[in-house]
Amino acid sequence: MSGLNTSYRMSLGDFRHEALDEVGSTNEECLARARAGAASGLWITAARQSGGRGRRGRAWVSERGNLYASLLLINPAPMSAIGSLPLAVAVALHHAVARILPPDGRALEVKWPNDLLIGRKKVSGILIEGEFLPDGRHAVVIGIGVNVRFKPDNPTYPVSCLAEEGASVFPEELFAHLYETMADVLNLWDGGEGTPQVMERWRSVACGLGEAITVNLTDRSLTGRFAGIDDQGLLLLETQDGRVEVISAGDVFFA
Image (cartoon, rainbow, N blue to C red; front, side):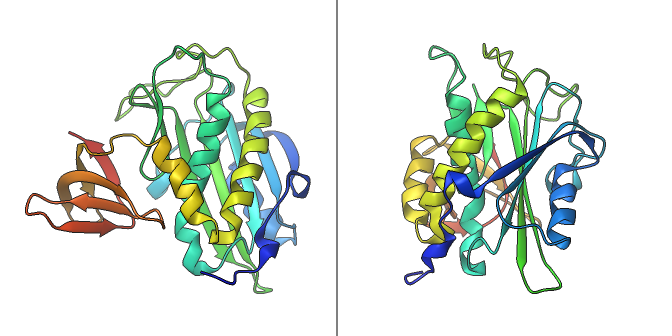
């Protein structure tokens, strides 16, 4: 990816923030703003979402007390580089949450590609969506939900919240940290040019490296050893016969 335009870099001053009380979905609000001509770097936060959603159309419980934030980027990178963006976002969120957790708490880690875990319990969700606008621009929205004060009832997997992990923090305070760390990591990512450097940061906070895992794909499940990620953020799964499967998307479960 050599020769990418340095205009992909964004400094803290390139971002702006609009806080809403309630909205259907912060992602949908960002996409609506993009269709209306909004420039890159717009953060939308909401105290509550009435129609929050996660990956694969799953509902995302969005009551007051947690963080719901979306960032609009316009033409953030060549299409060939977008695949590494979720891991960059996870690194930025990890850096933000690490600032407010007690130092003697349980391990804060990232599960591939971008789930934030504390003590192997999920505390956040990231949903990245994009569309091409009528004027040819590519709008990408980074949606982030963090369990700050509350966690879902009857979850399908182990979950926690920051309050349960000893962090006495309001969503607004966490967002102030995320505002800074996201600018830092996106500047490093630089439209994909800095992906190898971001992947090094990701590996330093990764969960389960070297462990036995199962990866659920859309059509099958694969089991093996989590051998790491390559410099573009693709998962490397070492199978029992010694082959290495390169995986671009899937749900990871630890043994």
